[in-house]
Image 1: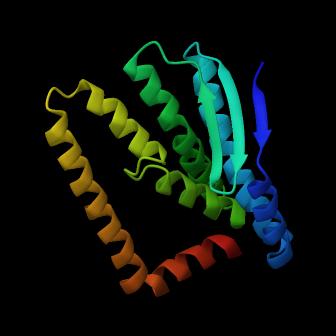
Image 2: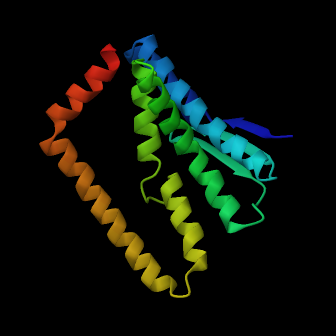
Image 3: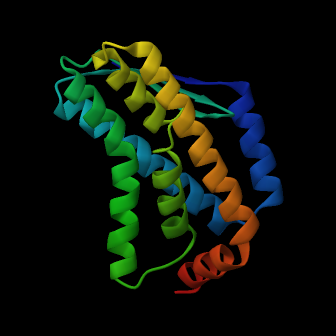
Length: 174
């Protein structure tokens, strides 16, 4: 049986979101989050694991599961959340659907693949670091990767914000 914990910070964050945003945006955001976590949960059970706890906080949802038997299974569990989001985005876009849910699926899927420790991409790199004989070099590579992606993200927001806005608006309007 899974233990579910909801922190006060999660409730406070949600209260503020509901005060300042419209309901379709909120439902799109939470729908993408639920789909993401469902991808992880399905992968945990598919690989023979068990979800031990789910904790809701202002920074997001943290799930604790029984340890995967192999490193490959652990990587699959980490990948299935972002892949569920990206697959939903691709399918809904191919069917001509748009809206906040579609945009949030793409954003959540891609952002969670970034190589930061608190995201799925960072967790995958930590799993891979266990395979590395030269962990010091691996951590240096990981740091370089983080700086690279951070630079790319900042550049995208600075130089292509108009283009990104047009893409997002196009998906939202459809």
